Image (cartoon, rainbow, N blue to C red):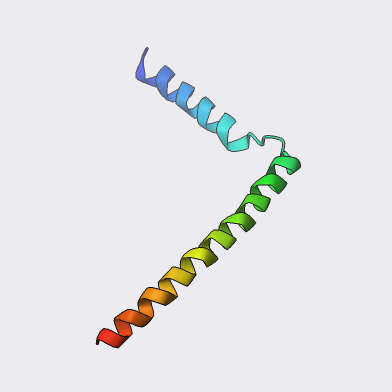
Length: 61
């Protein structure tokens, strides 16, 4: 394939990707956002450990 044909093909593919807009699955988005709330409680669990060990480090100094 010549360089001109190759460039035209890449341009066509790039244009298709640029203007392609898939349908938004709102139920999937809701599930993903619901999962992020669970990870916040997990972060809180680790925050308790961080507070516990940060206090010890301050005492050593």
